[in-house]
Length: 307
Image (cartoon, rainbow, N blue to C red; front, side, top):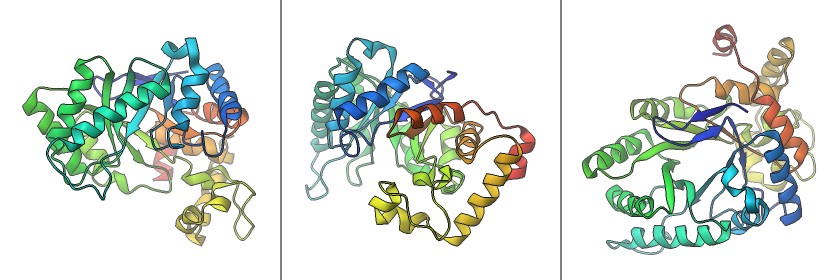
């Protein structure tokens, strides 16, 4: 599979990554291992998880399954900030990051994290405190590269200036929700990422399944689907105007010999500076479909027609 560098100086990532948020929630060890095996067979080298997935179980499933093949992949995980009910004091974020890293290393059964994300910014801690703690981990060899997630354009700029001032490790990428259907990040986050030479890793590229074609206007949600299991996702995406878009995009893709899913992932991979698209899967077949979708390279005319 094609790989792309994350930003100007990050790791090389397979253009389709495996989102591991289903591990420990929808999938147990055996089912998770089957998905991981399919991803490895299909050429995926980018595995994305977080300490909050499971919680912790996703990392444990990955660590237990990879074994001797750990060096063949780029392992990305994320730490959460301090609990919201815990008052800020100087050093508390640093302690949280170091403890989270050690716990993730243990669960992943590895001696280093290839790509370590700040899952959410701490609203009270100075950005310098978090970056200093992450720089410690990089210098200790426990983390190779850093990235942010769920940040604003201003927060991207602030972190870049802070890293420049300190001379320490910097973020090489950022992970954001981005899809054909959800495009708010194009206003400020994407331009800021370009300015600061960050790669972008979109998550929820399929809008929680709406861009796979599995949901139909006026029909019951398929059993076990995200919309059936979590009303908050259905409430967010299910609307007539969204089904209008889905029907239009389905026709657009079919006219070119492709599926809606292939359009959703191919469109994102055509956006600069996207490095890798995170796609979750609950079965090996879904893994293979996601990988196949990553092969479509839309033309300039295709992109102009989509707007």
